[in-house]
Image 1 (cartoon, rainbow, N blue to C red):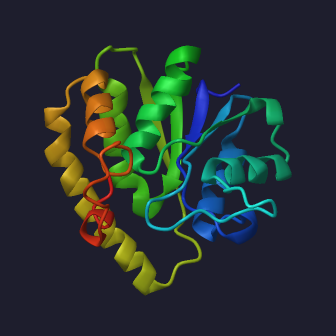
Image 2: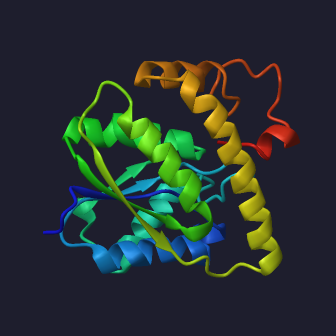
Length: 210
């Protein structure tokens, strides 16, 4: 066994037919390289930037499910793979991972794997969410995977969006000082999750998804 209770992989997109984009596949490849018998938690229902691809029956293909299937195809034991399919941004990735999986299972030592372009924001958000009261004694480690399969222009665009989103998180985080506050904000203020959709999630908000 490794020094981790679980490996966590945020979603990085999914294409038609449930195919992972190269940068996302690299996250799962790295997980398989480091896997030593601990559970692997795949995160994300999708993204607010585009609708999910559909399977042959017309059902959505969730990012976490596509990731789980990729791991199984690489030889990971299905009984060690867990999914979270409710989140559509990185804050919810972290919050739902904690509420749905790590708190109930008492997984304290966590390895989080994501792409290089996504690492700074991911590490800051996960450290914030997993340090909030009630304190469960979490210990987080982070591992980056290569930004494979992107053009220079696409990578620059993603880095700029990451920078803007991280700036928004740094304004938000000091206001939300416990899990209850994050939960309330997410489901009453965040347009990807709140019931009040009178103001649509517009282009400006899409560029600053957390």
